[in-house]
Length: 472
Image (cartoon, rainbow, N blue to C red; front, side, top):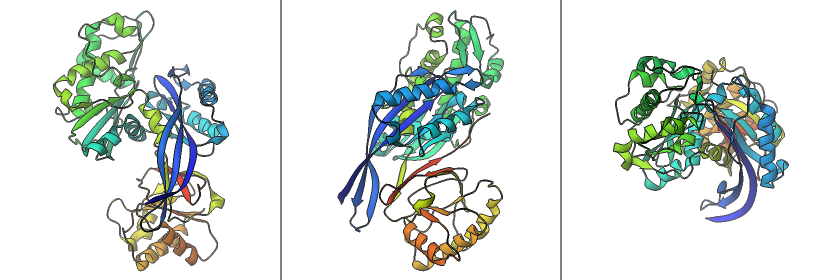
C-alpha cells in the first residue's frame, strides 16, 4: 500500500456546555492511498490539535437564553489566537450540550455560529451524538480497539451524563441521563440559587430538605449525590437498575451491556478517582455547584470496582476534541457526485429497511416512510450487498430511480458497502431526464440522522453524519 497524495485541512470544534464553553482548532492530514487492488482511497491519516482555548463559563443572558454575541466573541478570539484564518477552516462542529441544549435559542445559536464559521462547520445537538463524540475525544474508542475489549465512557458534564460503549473500537450503544454537576447551583454565600426540575422527584423520594435561598446541609447534598452515583453504578451493570434511575434517562438505547472497563470524562470526570473523606460544605459550595461532591460520590461508589476504571486521555475537553477531530468522515475512491450541488447541509436520512434488506422492495419500503419527511432533498441510505453483482446493482438503481420520482432535488444515495461509483453510473445512465446524482459509500447511518456533504477534496468528499435533537 503506498501514499500518493498529501493534503491538510483545518477543523474547529466548539462545545457550548451547561457549565463551560471550549474551542479547539485542529489540523487534519488527508492522504490518498493506493491499495493492493489499485483503487485510490482517501483517508484521514493524522489529527493534530494546534490550539485549545481557555475553558470559560458558558455566557447566558438569563436562565433560558444563551448570549450569542459573547459566545461568538469567544470563538472569534480562539480563531485569532490559533493563527489560522477563518476562511481556511473547512470543517468541524458546533455542539450544544447538556442543559444548554434546552435553552430557548439553542438551535438559533448553533445554526448562526456554524454559518459564521463556514459552509461545512455543522451545527449539532443531541445526547447520542454528544456521547459518541465524547467517547472518541476521551480516547475510549482507541483504547477499546487496542485492548480488544468493551469499554464504557461516561462523560459527565454540568447537566447530563452521556454514555457510549465501544467494543473493539466500534460504538455499539449510546444513551444519556440527567446527571451532572450543575443540577444544583449556589451563590458565593453558599445559598442554593438553582435546583434542576430533572431531580426534584429524587429530592422528594429521599425526603431531604433543599430550598432555594437557603444554605444546604452537607448530609442532604451527600444523599442526592450518592443516589446519582448509584444510578451510574446501575447503568454500568454493576447493580440492578431501579425505577428512579430509569426516570433519569433522557434518551433511549440502554440495553444493559456488561463491559470490561469504565472511563469517566467531562468536567465532573476530573474529580472521579480522588476520594476526599473529609470534604466540607465550604469546599463544595465555593465552586458554586455540586460537581466536586458528585465526583467524590462516584469515586466512593466505584471503589469496589476500581480495577475496571481506566484513565481517559482527555476529561473535561473530551467532547470538544471529539467535535473538532472526529465529526468528519471521508467518502472517496469509488464514489459518484455532481459537484454543482455541493455543499449540502442538513439532509435527512431515509432508510427503507431497519435490518434485513430486500433489494426488490426498496421502492415500496421507501414510500412507506416518505410521508414522515417534510424536508427536501432527502438522502436514501442502504447497507447493500458486500460484493454485488452487476444485476444486483442494476436492480438497486432501478428501485432508487423509481423512489426518487417522488422526491425533488438531487438523487442522493448513501451506502455502507463499497460500490457507490458503479451504482451512481447506472442511475445516471438510466435516468429519463437530466438530474444531479450523488452516490457515496463506506458511511453507516440510522433513521433520524442528517447528513452534511462538503465540497470535494480531490475525488473524495467530506461527510458528517449527525442527529439534530434539541431537548425541551
